[in-house]
Length: 114
Length: 114
Image (cartoon, rainbow over all chains, first blue to last red; front, side, top):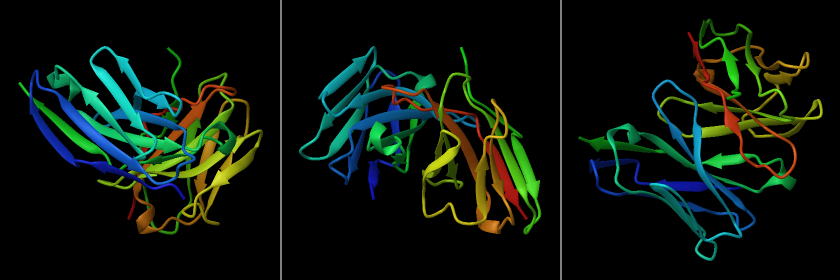
């Protein structure tokens, strides 16, 4: 089955710096890659996603890149703010025709220092 | 904005007891999921449910687990005889049918088995 690896497990940056979180996946058939942000005591909240027919997607300070050949995708947060501090999870899915069941990475705890 | 809700937020039970975790998915969604997250570990897929039947289940979802949609709004996860290792956060998620792959997560139920 699909296996998703995520690095780093913890990341600390100064406010205003950029943060990059990387994930790799094993199943080349995966075609949907969401990123979730989980704040303390809450469920994962989708922040951005990318599909396999797209190489890069951007939404304000957040961008995601996908390299299908290498089977890795990355989350980039620019101009980080203290409220970006949370645990971030990447996930991979085989898509609609496989019930869209997602496999998650282990998570990255991002701390943004004021 | 519509959201997935879960009850209870916390549950403490004795080993061997049955527990039922409840979820109310977003009203027009048709695919439902349960995930669990053991403390400090990744979010793991348990089961997906569509059209009143299980679509897919992981190896974690053994005979002790069952899911049900007893009415038009609730989606439940039952653990028949809880074990210590069932202690975790349990998240429900839902998505709309069709081309939208995004899954929306509830806030989770923290289950502690003593």
